[in-house]
Image (cartoon, rainbow, N blue to C red; front, side, top):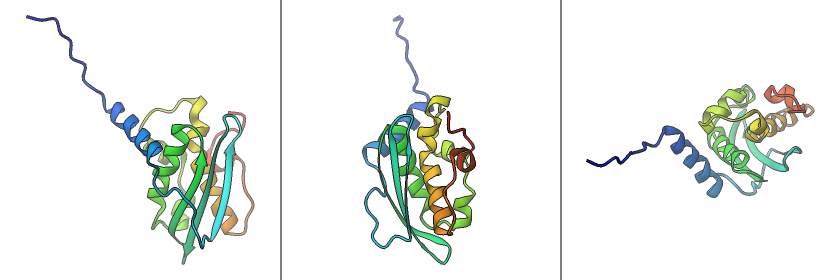
Amino acid sequence: MSDTIFIVSLPMDIYAENILEHFRHPRNKGTLTGATVKHEEANHACGDTVAISLQIKNGKILRTQWEGTGCAISQAAMSLLSERLVGMNIETAAQLHKKDVLELLGIPVSTRRMKCALLCLHTLKNALHIAEGGKTQNWLDTVEIDEGS
């Protein structure tokens, strides 16, 4: 009898693979012509950037495209969120919370990487504020984290 030990992959590996898949093959990445609103944000702590373009009609997000650079978490989060946004009404999109993005990612995110994960949501919420004629907000107002984090 052998003393071979089998290691069973945890579901976490599946989620990590999903993040890498979205990082390597991002969804909805590109330039959107005819966008209703475009907005860019950056995580100055690490250099990640995301620019989102939304085509909104009758209070609904018809199309979204985005551009960006950065770590796998920031870029995969934007890719995942972009898939969810298409067809969503803007009131629902404006009510998205950090827990929604963290659920999309499906992995634990450390405090140090939280801004990476939530850059997409911060950018989306500020784009929606601009689309409604408002001003951009800080991180604490959009995604419930301190700018110093």
